[in-house]
Length: 83
Image (tube, rainbow, N blue to C red; front, side):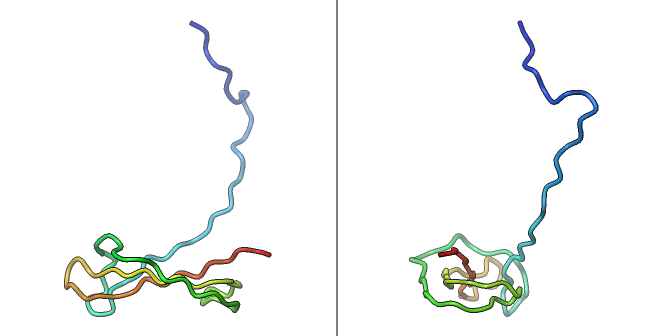
């Protein structure tokens, strides 16, 4: 049985950039728990600056509801696809 070659001894692991993602919260009880998305997402094309300060080319609204208190809500995502 031959062993597959791995990373050479002494070599460093590559640095990886990180990006943060905030989970949506229920506007009533503030939990991040929710049921699975239900229904079709709505896509709104348009350009602007998202709340994180980066550009976006579309806003996506996904219907869901809180799994604790049952409050219906939309999860809003800003998407950027360069042209």
